[in-house]
Amino acid sequence: MHGLVAGLQRIRASTIEREDSQVLFYVRLFRFVLKSNLLNTIESGVIDAELAGDSITVSYHLGTVRLCIVATVMIVVFAAFIDSPRLNLAQSAGIGLLGWLWLFGVNYLITLVRFRWFVKRCVREGFEDWSRLARTA
Image (cartoon, one colour):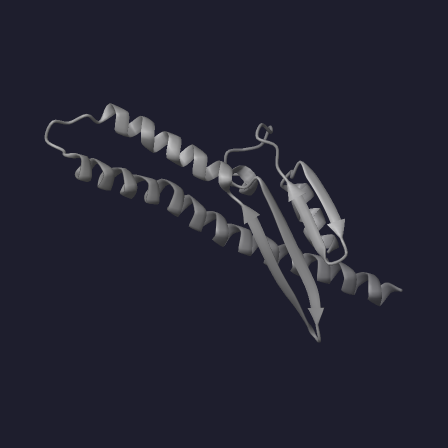
């Protein structure tokens, strides 16, 4: 758990709470971070890490409502400027849907992959720190 909390602090989660086997975090809308920060597309999350014999089982839930709203607004604005007499309503809706799937869907998938790597790295670092402390004690 310590590795997950330290990792979330590194990427500047706004609020981090630890409850038993869970780490809950929240991200403010406006933060001074780089554009590539992992939490830019996430507003909250719960990470649950439990020992299962000789292994650690990690599951997580991420809140991405903000990403969905931003993608939807961007597509609606884009569609408002694409008023072509050659497109009927069904074609416009199809283009809008494809644009939304691209804008939201691809960002969502990238976020999931990056967050999975982040969790794996944090758990590994936390376990290595714990092993190092156990050997010196």
